[in-house]
Length: 335
Image (cartoon, helix red, strand yellow):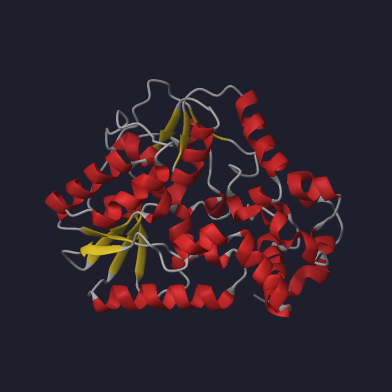
C-alpha cells in the first residue's frame, strides 16, 4: 500500500497524539510515525487519529504502508513476520474452516470468523431463521482482512480473488455481513453486492426493540465504523430507540485486538480494557463479535451484542473458552 500523499501536510497540532494511546506512548504525531517502519505493527489501526486530524491524514493507511514496505523490502523481514504470525496465516491464508455447502439462493449470510467463534448457538438460530423465513443461505469463509493487515499484499490479493471467484461460481449476487470488519474490508474490493445484516433486515421491513429496560444505552463503536458510522445508522433504522438515548464510548481507542498490534503492545491493549472496566458501565452494547469476545474474555460483564439482543437470542450466551472449536464446527455445518 502506498503512503498517503497528504502526510507532509501535517501541521503538528498533536491532536492525533492526544487521541491515540499508541502515539502518546511514543510521543510522535502521524508525520513522525510515517518514518518509523520499526513501529509498523504496533498501531491498532483504530482510525481515531484520522477522525481528529484537521488535514485528514490517515494513520491506518500509514501503518499499512509501513507494513507492506517492510515485508516487500527484505525477504528476511517477510520471513520474520510470517514466523511471528504463523498461526494466523495457517488458519486464514486459505481458511481452513471454509464451508460453501449452505447456498440456497443468490443471497448468503457471511458470518465472518468471530461471530462463529463467540456466538455459535445464536448464529445457528439466525441462519435457520433466515433460511426458513427468507430463503437465504450462508457461506463460511475469511474475508482476508487479518492477512491484509500483515502487509503481505500478494496473499491479500490471492484471498480476495479466491473468495470472489468462489462466490461468483456459486451464483452469489449478495453477501450479507454480520461483522463490521468484513463489511468494510470487502465492500471496496469485491465485485459483488455487500450489505450488512441490519440493512437487509430494513429491506425486509423488520423492526425491533432492544431487550433493555433503561432508556439510555452505552454503545462501543467498532473501529471500522467510527468515521462514517454507516452500520450504526443502519441499526438505528430498525430499532425503536432515539439516537439521543445512545451514549457512545469515545475515549477508548480499541477493544485491544485491532491491527494485530496486541502482539507488540500488550500493555496498551490491557490499558484499553482497564479504562473500560473503570467506567463501570451497565449494559454495554456492541455490534462487533470481536469486541464482545475480547471484553467478555477480560471479565467485562453485561455485554450485549445488538444483533443477538434484537433477535431475542440473548439467552444464548457468548462462548470464549471454545472459540476455536466453535468456528471449526461450522466447517461441517449444514442448514
